[in-house]
Image 1 (cartoon, rainbow, N blue to C red):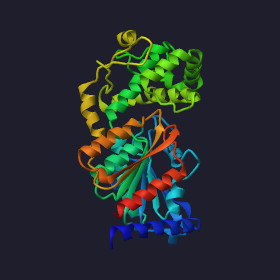
Image 2: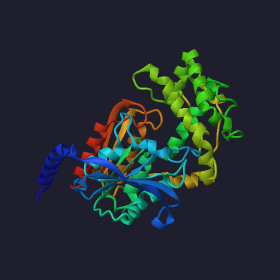
Image 3: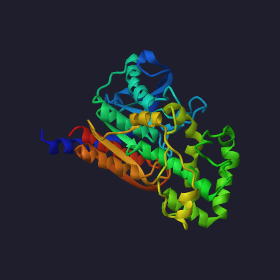
Image 4: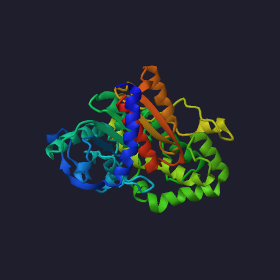
Length: 386
């Protein structure tokens, strides 16, 4: 059978099964905890959803890796990510296409990329224990889970392919620096709004900043940027935080970028055994007085142990099987330039035939629709048979 024949047959199958998908529903098949006995890095929650009736099951499995969950979050917080912003159920979408769906809560909250890779793969042992037979296995994930997905497809040939949504896949170091820059520049333009200035000697995020984030600090951020539009303009110019075409997006975009500094810094330092953020020698541009800005902004030097450990979180572009990516073009949390950097990595190792990147013209982090996800999954399935 020629490649063209395979493509036409798959497209025909997708068209026909869309009608059949309406006859298939989704049900929670099993949930609970698993651990090292199943190959996970520690105890973790899991869920498995199956198509109903079981005659809809095509024998394939799609594993899901969730995004960042702050340390100290209530158990099960990660399950809120099983729904897209437009309300589409991810397990429901996957099951309607005939695939089994399984997801892990990971054995660690916070920075958990390495645990996510191991714990997601261990879900296959959970499925085996449930006596669910399966053939091809795909992986998908959003945000931090997008990085889990990408590194899994790069390093594990047992995955038939992956769909990564809005992940920091181009450079994790640059992502760390992006969040750090967001904070030091905010402190420069809006001193005191987030309390004491964040500096190398004052690097630990105080507990009250996290505890009172929603009630005190988020309103304070919004009030400050509204009261000083010229400072806000300079802050957006120098930080590169995307707001899209609507100026009203500035508030939620800035809050979103600063949230990671508040909730992820302490855990990142503990996990990486040191400070990974560095802006020594960085020249900031875009303010009304760049010389004053660069002379006054807080400076941080990275710790060597953290940088050594950070290497484990970087992608290499050596895709073994197909990877499809979705990314909103105005993402204030994981900037779209992550996609450009990853494209360059893949090109440098001659693996572009395995990569398809789909930009989504929208504002927000992982702000993709059910239709976006379905198109991307269809493309992934198409690539996996070529």
